[in-house]
Image 1: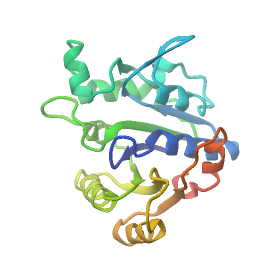
Image 2: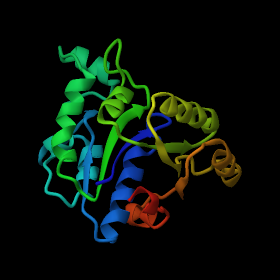
Image 3: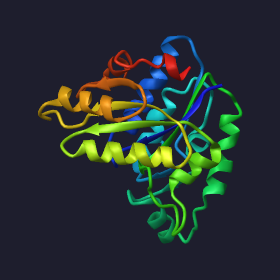
Length: 226
């Protein structure tokens, strides 16, 4: 069953928002869904204890009965780069170990499984490995979320080139408007369509309301993923 690694042009590009929208779109079509965020950093104190908000959001769009621990095997309390969070905790992150922790959920074979990275494509795990190595070990095609703001064109093109250089397929990209006042948005999206050799799965407008995920899901075309 289809599974993809979701990366972004940078931190706060909207990977979780776009992932939830893709999962929601699949669920609307009666498909089973699952998600992983193998490494997360940053927690808030809730009535249910310390939780990472991205992990909780992903869990809401998983039709398979996954626990937060299954979705997110490794979480550090402070919002820092994974290798720094690991060093503070006295741990060493290794790509192979992280990949192995992902396999049980992937083996459940939901109709759509998304593995969301942390930060951008080349976020370090240790001095030699990055999260890109996890995607490579899992042999997953990649979906790139482009945070649409000034400067995103170079970030998006460089990331797309790096994904392809890793030997993985870039399955598609999503433009996610993170700057509500971004000038010439459509012109930037059209430029990326001509510069990234992968289909545009959709463009998500600036949405700041409770039903944002459901609305965003209707702006995506995920047929090519399934």
